[in-house]
Length: 148
Image (cartoon, rainbow, N blue to C red; front, side, top):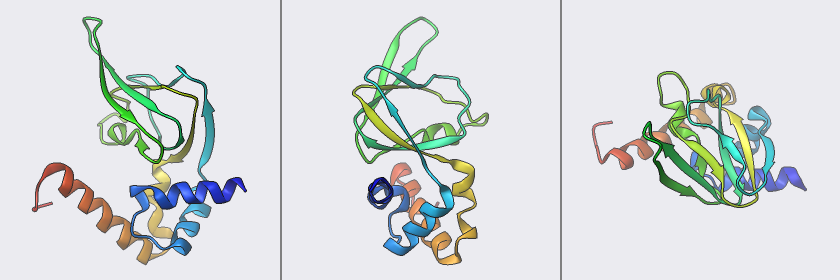
């Protein structure tokens, strides 16, 4: 069943690491992720485009490309199944994508409105605490800081 597959994607995502199966099912019912398929070499989001959701790459590969004013293009990252897309846009002031995301293969992505993630505390305080603690650990790992 498609819903079971999508719950497995959430379960395997670092975004929901530390949550029990029951809690992930609660989160799934609350966030209502939308699945979208892309063909190879299809643009998922353009650099500078407003972004209101993040994506969990269900299958396939996606390339993150930064285009410069002089016309150069720089591949910043290649995402693989299970990884989170567009987290960098959520951290920008204007909520715009700093990169173009291009499907490198046929792919399928589960999209989640990031505002729904911010409301995750409406499910339960336990889910909120676990999610906050995991995000805190991720920030410390990325920055190498113990002060965050």
